[in-house]
Length: 295
Image (tube, rainbow, N blue to C red; front, side, top):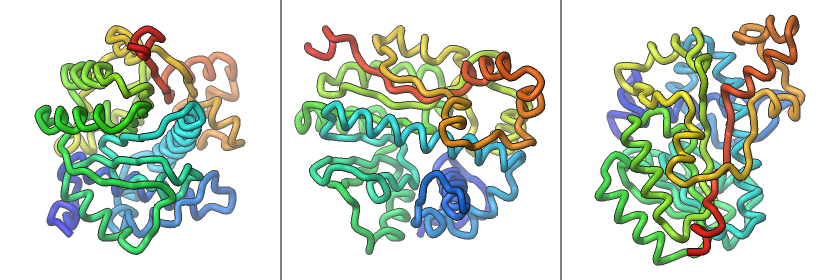
């Protein structure tokens, strides 16, 4: 295991994967869990659990992470139902979907992240069997040459691919996000793109700012576009499906934590706060126009 993984503080963006895995572990151990990830606690380790405890507003952040996990599960299943044969998960972190989801055995699933993180993950999951054809590729997404090689290989090996960037865009600069969006759009075989987003002037509420301050020196949130969907639409992407955070919570019967910024206001002004909340945080599957997808 690398020194980066053993460190007692978050030293770079890869380390946040331990935190997210710990959130999944805590959800999985609830009696009313909305998903079961039996690998999450082992992947998170003691340090990941400590991160959850040390993060400000940990209950609120865990709620948001659980909603994100379930929403993206739904979008992945939808894309596969539409014929996707390859999934490219960029900045995969310690995600376990190829192990815990019901996926076609013939599906090709490619996980991409930095080498130290992938090595750590492979070590932990060495004895486990994925449900589909799983491949891990080491690549720093900030390295455009490495990313270009990866995308060129994808063009040669598939005709109907999905890319996932869960929890990735926020750590990119606006320019980096634009280049990634344009590079993905240019791949003929890439039909769908799943991402999470926050938008509008309320997306940086006090709780979010407190967390951002906690990690700003090691894993700063840089993406600053107030309307990410419109930003990616300018590169040719269209919304195919859009899941909003509060709608997702309703489907699961999971109420907002009492400490959540909107919880009290939700009781007083339910319609208005729902509208604001749903406009602020969401999970989308993007696609290309029919003409672009066909050409």
